[in-house]
Amino acid sequence: MKSQESYRAKKREIKTEMQAGLLKLAVALARTCGCDPNELLPSYGPKQQSAKQRKHYSPDELVDTTEAGAILGLSKKTLENWRCQGKGPAFKSIGKRCHYSVRDLEAYLAANTFGSTSEYKER
Image 1 (cartoon, rainbow, N blue to C red):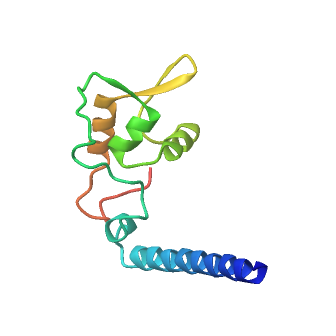
Image 2: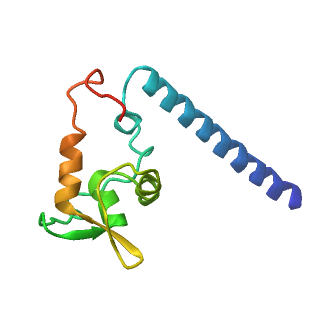
């Protein structure tokens, strides 16, 4: 009984390692070709909300980090890291919480829209 359980556990472990390896290979290949891995691998990036789940925000509305991440297609952790690094969209600190103006998020997206990779310059 134990040998069968250990066999199944080892099999799951190998399968997980193989999937991770294939994902890394696919991401590296996409980046080598100049493609966005999120376009080629939908499960690679943050989960996209369906049209029914998307909320419509007014430009003056404040949203929390999770909602801002959903609007930008980024994870909450990415926005938290960017705040510490002084990158990303402008935010407002209210007490111990950070909020983003929808208008600021839209401005950030507009300022970071490019027609080609040659237009992009690291800031």
